[in-house]
Length: 362
Ligand SMILES: NC(=O)c1ccc[n+]([C@@H]2O[C@H](COP(=O)([O-])OP(=O)(O)OC[C@H]3O[C@@H](n4cnc5c(N)ncnc54)[C@H](OP(=O)(O)O)[C@@H]3O)[C@@H](O)[C@H]2O)c1
Figure 1 (cartoon, rainbow, N blue to C red):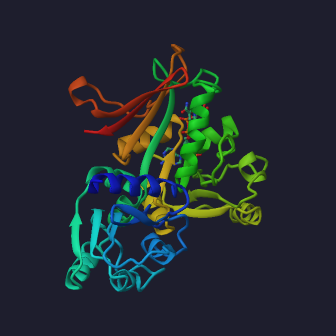
Figure 2 (tube, helix red, strand yellow; figure 1 turned 180 degrees about the horizontal axis):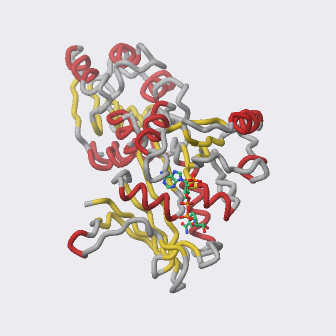
């Protein structure tokens, strides 16, 4: 089989760790000898040994002369496996094929040079684009120390995210809702604005599919969040994070909400009355949140877009027209078409009766 085919298998294996490996990268590793797979593993939790090591230790065959295929360069400084590179060298494999070099500043390329020194043949850059895409959350976080940001919007054909009464249930189909839950399970955190909590009283959990719940983050400058809201009352997993003004004076309410399991991030408020998103994102990055799914509403979408913070936009379009209601990006006011913010379409698909478009800023 070709190197590409084995790296493709490693990528598919790595995908099984989605939503479980963070803040560690998604890694799939396979050991091949005489064109036969003799060992395989993927990262299923941030706290376990590297998949390369699990594959080597788990095989019943002699690893001498085998080839190791992995979508990401093994990290020379892995805290979980300080001896990861050494163990690979001792296994006497003869060749390592790597999808992409690890961009982690404390790692990039250094294990490759160790392997080369030990006489192991190295081939890198196989299906590099796919390997990058697979670990885009990890790469963004390690390079910029802030999370990878996806805006997830459900809209009518005419760009409304809710009707004139603020009701958004349901713009899109049950299939889209189920896919949204699947997405939640893959991200470290979801984020909404205070108005969305007030109007929708959402749970922001994963219920329609199997998977772990992300952190649930609310932007609430004045700490108006009601202890009676479902986000607070049903915070069984203690994943609720409230972002509020640094100068919040309602200390009693902070204490009360903390006693109900809420965690707090304090951030400055800008002149326009909004929490300073650059500070919020930095603080979330420090908490090892490497991916953030922004779920609305309109003011929050507008603010992320206005400040050019999004890495990608997922827009689910329900085939409906409202004419009036709450707009997708009311706060983004561009006066002329030549100055319009421009996106390119990365992907599109039909989900139930809806259209899903994946966009990236040009
Ligand atoms: N179709 C969809 O995809 C979708 C998704 C979600 C919601 N919705 C709908 O959207 C509506 C609510 O949207 P909305 O535009 O009125 O409000 P929103 O975006 O949900 O919340 C905005 C509020 O969040 C707080 N906030 C704090 N810092 C912020 C920042 N940096 N940027 C933006 N907001 C910040 C502010 O309240 P404080 O000043 O009090 O902090 C602000 O007024 C509801 O009707 C809901 O059903 C639709």
